[in-house]
Amino acid sequence: MGRIAGRFARVEPRRHARQLVLGLLADLPRKNCWTIAEHIGDATPDGLQHLLARAKWDADAVRDDLRAYVGDHLADDQAVLVVDETGDLKKGTRTLGVQRQYTGTAGRIENSQVAVYLTYTSRHGHAAIDRAPYLPKSWTSDPERLQQAGVPDGTGFATKPQLAQRMIEHALDAGTPAAWAAADEVYGDNPALRSALEARGLGYVLAVSCSHHVPTPAGPVRADRLAKKIPRRAWQKLSAGRGAKGHRYYDWALVAITAAHLTGHHHLMVRRNRTTGELAYYRCWSPHPAPLATLVRVAGNRWTVEEMFQSSKGLAGLDEHQVRRWDSWHRWVTLALLAHAFLAITAARERQGHTPADDGTSPDGLIPLTCNEIQRLFITLVVQPVHDTAHRLGWSTWRRRHQARARHSHYQRQAALQP
Image 1: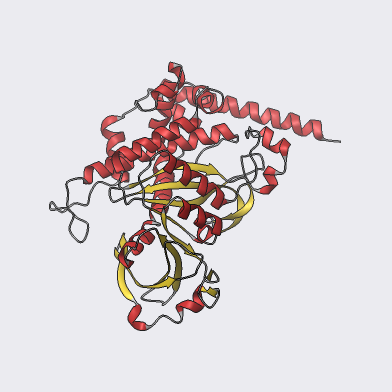
Image 2: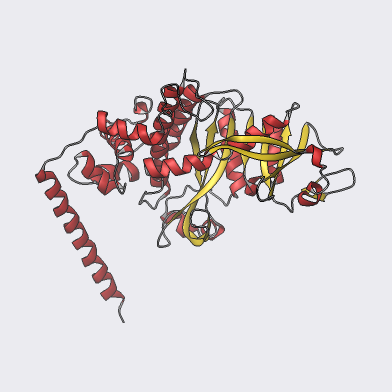
């Protein structure tokens, strides 16, 4: 918290930011301004709500502090910048960016809010360092809706690959050490993003669809058709990294891509499931020759963003915000990512100097401390808020009074709208 203290001109929002981060790290069944305010001992949620909605501080500046914090502890010149989006199910139509759209969180089209995240992944650990809300065209074509949500003037429609490109370039401009980028098909099938990464000299291993066309001397060929021509001797069994149940072994093959207009080293990498035979495809590029094992490692690192989503939502309340506007969303998400980075970096520091066995255990028969276990120990041993009965009863009264006012307002509005 000392890293971001200078971003707040007044002591009150500085204190509330610290309290909010502690609340995000707490073991609460739900995390919002109401539950966190009660947990930290405030009489009402007014202070936390003011911090998110009206206080003067720059969430992007705190994002820069977050990126520097992660870089100081996880920096690696062979690190991977991993991009992916996640959706949060929301009700109504006024929350920033919400509409009926596909989200992997639900696995179907739902009323949801989608955002793109950038995760820094190195041999030391991984944590998110940037975020960008996705605004559909139904939002960017409606100036009144943008104004109501507090979206800055001049904000236009941007695709998810465009948001990813902006975040990657911002990280590189800030001096973030990295050698690779990784993402799924949404980003790998986008030629503009691939060209931008090549222009920056950042190698990439981007998943592409089976219908992706690969340039060859004979003309463009679909990735799945090119994979059928791979000889049996070209496949190699390699691990894409450790999973919860051991190494993730697949068969891998590499096909060189040659064309007159291409520079650097281009490949199509194909992954085959050793049980089902299912194939997955990756466009790969590097400014210098890279062995298959390196490309496989980068492809395996793409899954760290899924681990980040799971732990930041489960442990730091990333998806539990109840805010509607642009500034409030950026502030909540940034502080949630800071809380998660604290857990991820603490776990990485605990692993330093320990060489685990093949099954991931240490010589004393224990696995390294996980983010979940660090959160439990931190809350139990360091933060132990204890509140008396009067505090609990006071919050019960406040909730019921607030809900009564809300109900009265709803009935008045309904009566006014009746013919």
